[in-house]
Length: 149
Image (cartoon, rainbow, N blue to C red; front, side):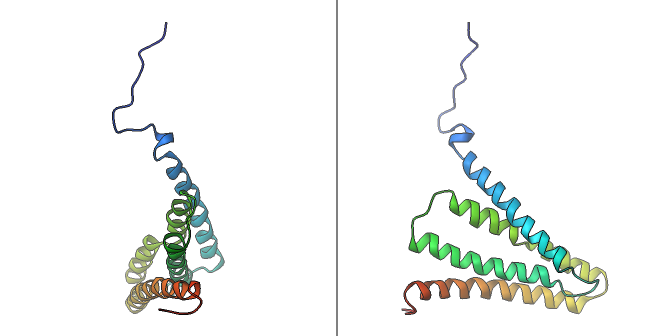
């Protein structure tokens, strides 16, 4: 004799056939990206009251890679459906760190370094936006053979 048979409600797929694979690749990519970011902060630690260069460059480089990657996967070639969640959301999401950016700003203000905090706040925002815009435009131009039109 068998127990009652459970049925999946209409419109709801079991996790492994639904979002399970995407969740798994985002988690794996996030772990990889965060580990690389953490290694960079160990390699290039911030001095008390100093400008957090490792986090600044991590966010700027990560934004540039996001810009180039999104051009390639949305405008140039068809990729595996799990590449974008793995690399874009997972690896680059774990690598870039705007939460650490916010904590760094608060720490700088709290430790009596408001000028450094404000410079870091503005410079990171400008660098991140410029990096993604320049990388997007540069990737498009490069893929069109250098012809920007």
